[in-house]
Length: 90
Image (cartoon, rainbow, N blue to C red; front, side):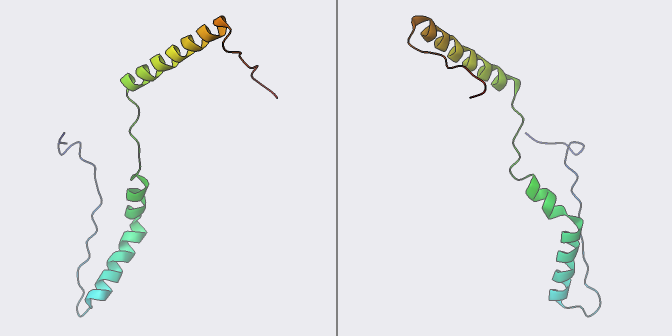
């Protein structure tokens, strides 16, 4: 699935240009400083393990499974093969 330009996520761009007789190591240090101060890495790492919200179909399937398990359990209770423990405080 492709995203159009209007749907694309806006990502901030950081650019650093060499100043005069600045060394490449100095340039890298300045770039790293800008990246850390802009918190781009922080937001990227935060979204790394993000889960998609469950779809309506998945919710329905899960609910149907839950109902089926409940019916089986109640059937076993009626047959006397399963005893329900009282819930609540011990």
